[in-house]
Length: 193
Image 1 (cartoon, rainbow, N blue to C red):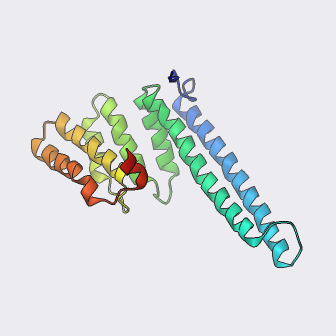
Image 2 (cartoon, rainbow, N blue to C red; image 1 turned 135 degrees about the vertical axis):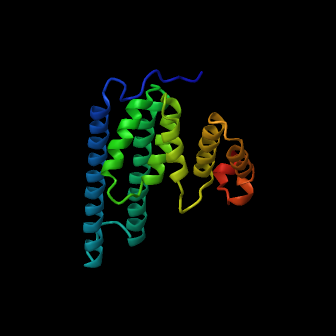
Image 3 (cartoon, helix red, strand yellow; image 1 turned 90 degrees about the vertical axis):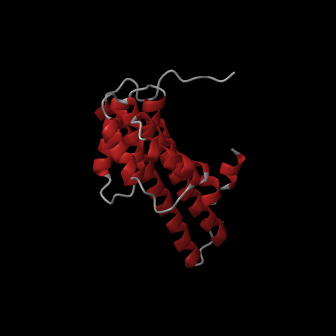
């Protein structure tokens, strides 16, 4: 039997407190990663100066990549937990506000397109925000086309055009969505689905 979550981790907190908790955990993990990389650097220096510490050079390289991948995966998991505010708690207003806080902190604009995609998904669930959501989804353009991300972008676009009764754009997006598997190289994971 599948256990269904009743609430997200951030259910009891307002948007500002939830963002603060998310940010605190992110900072802790970032500093832990920096400390682990520092220890690895010390190990490499020991190896360079021919002091035997029991690790081979390749062992250290593998450990380095494990630390980096672990950091990236933990970031994905943390953001997924944050997304449960929308999917489990069904609170698009709180999630939208948290996304706005994240957008303010994204100085280099690395997460701009992903944030606009999530904000467009929030606007679907918020009354009176259809035009705002449509403007977000129209601005989204990823440099690297990834199947699941493009699929999400097109499905959200199709929803907006359908809801706004824009048949021409709806049919265009629907056609693009139908041809998506042929237009993009799919990963093994996407093919399995």
